[in-house]
Amino acid sequence: MSIDRLNTGDIVQAAALFGLLSFPMRVFGYFLQELPRSVVVSARLDKVLAAPHEPGAATDDPPSVADGPLSVSFEDVSFRYGDDPPVLDGLNLNIAAGSIVALVGVTGSGKSTLCELIPRLVDPDSGTVELDGVDLREFDPVAVRSEVALVFQETFLFADTVRENVTLGDPVDDTELERAASIAHAAAFVHRLPNGWDTVVGERGVTLSGGQRQRLALTRALLRGPRVLILDDATSAVDPVIESAILRDLRTSLETTTLVVAHRVSTIELADEVVFLDEGRIVATGSHPELLATNPDYARLVHAYVDQESMTEDIDHDEDAGRLSS
Image (tube, rainbow, N blue to C red; front, side, top):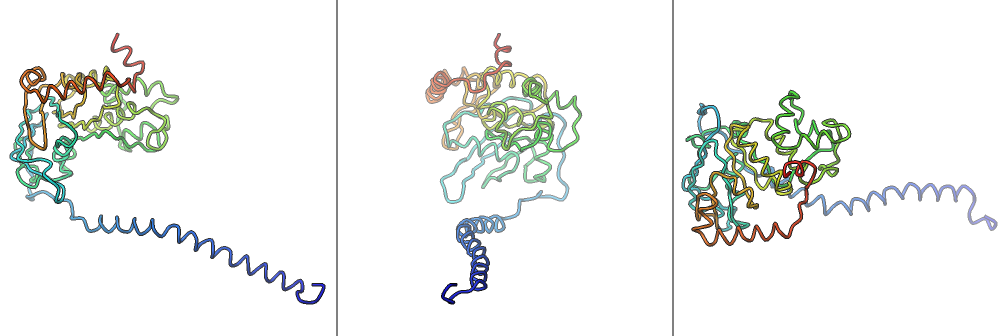
């Protein structure tokens, strides 16, 4: 300024230009940062949009089924994911209405896939899955899922109240809510929360223990009054004492057929029938004592479960477990 190369206006103009340029440069940097992520998301969306539509009912007049628990049958069922080896290979199984059946096997033996076939999350490549003697493909998938409840090991809870997470916004009578929670052994710990059913839990239920989240998921399923209940390792984080009490209450308080993917001996012992799977095939069926006495592979797996339980501390031990065991 002193030698007349710059005046005050030039400096103000340069500062203004730098200010105008800074925002586009920041946006451009953000764009470069987000571009790889957007490409991945776009590819995933393309896969979803290209996926075939969910199959509907095979007939315009879906069949009706009897009231009460439903029987489930698998007739020569095979299933594979893509070009992988078969997950289920010529599987035949009849599950009586109202029974409790434990599915036992090593990881990858086909237990979860078998469970997913019943609510038609997937359809078999060959063979038939029947509900009360009727091929599932004759039912509308929505109708099937109104009768079948599938509870997974991983539970998703929203950052909302316990009540909303369980009812999902449906109008539910408090008596029904308490009954379902009592069977799932969730009522006692819910009542101990600061605001009971109106207590807000964090995203994915981070303020609750794993066992508490699983019991709320079971309560959510029981509120729908399922006629077939599938627990795919859905009580793995629940104290063994509480888990056994839950299964006993399911037997005495509900009219439902129950399938349990089991990894605890106490759970297996409560089942009416044990189905032992290996590499997509049923190796043996029978009661727990029968299989222990007649199948060495089953006995080895059960002993491994016992050893694992003895080395693992109860991760959801609470006052309820203490009262039940006393």
